[in-house]
Length: 425
Image (tube, rainbow, N blue to C red):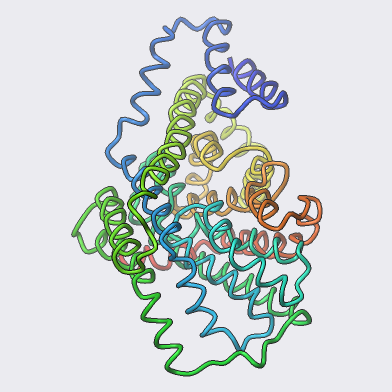
């Protein structure tokens, strides 16, 4: 059963079949040829049950809120404010790109959306200041990894539902690692890119800083409304997503006035397409995970690892290496849904909190967005700058190494991840 399930999956992926269809076909093949007397109707029931969930309603709402804010001029306001604050830093345009990506990630919850929104503005600006196009694109692509790490995050909702943990706690847990990753990348960019530009003539006054801050305030307080409302008991994460949609529309339409009613059909269509893609993968992955669990695969892997290795540090290293490898080939939601049933019992047995494991998995999968061939962030940055994926990949290596170093720091010092969740609890 397990051989058929994974064998068919990897063959189809190797042939270039989309991940959702590959998982579905592997499940049906294992059912029909694996000698298991389970009606195919059960697969359909599992798929429906997986997405028939009130918490999952947050996914389309957060996607729509991010699309509304992206179209409503939020990224420009954030960049203007951050530029006022960071103008004195060496290579400040590169640092602004990373910091602005972190702030926009707190609104969009999506890596590609963050690269498109921030990179679309900052890549041309960095090129004008002397940055090589490949280096500018690499900075924007790496900054985009913060999109799903800093809450709210669709990936966090997915993991929370699969692992049966609190969505709100996952959101809070992502704040500290997101900020630390943003700082680490900013330091690297500031040191390695200082030769490209240092705009001493950029005019800055207290009045301009205050004006930029006021303009950006509407965008900056959105994450505070979401997290404050959830932990203040005002609304659930799903209700918070709906509130975010209303807030995003009001700010984009009536405050920044860059959103027109004629833009709404295209925005709704884009959000619906993104939602359908996510929910389809979730539904199919649920049936795959159910069949895998029913076949005893997670238990067998857990028994093998715990029996073969005495050091939990070695096992954590293997888990991270596996997730990083899968990130080169699979999409974030697929990895979370595929691997959580396998690694969760192992890591919990070794004393890791499920919240910390979820954050480590999300950071892993986010790094996968900049590792070819499944490097969505690189493709978005390449489409903006016109630079080849190969050139961007070479320039993103130092940033990849920094992100990987921080990942292992969080893995072996999980107290960093659990600082805020433990404090609030």
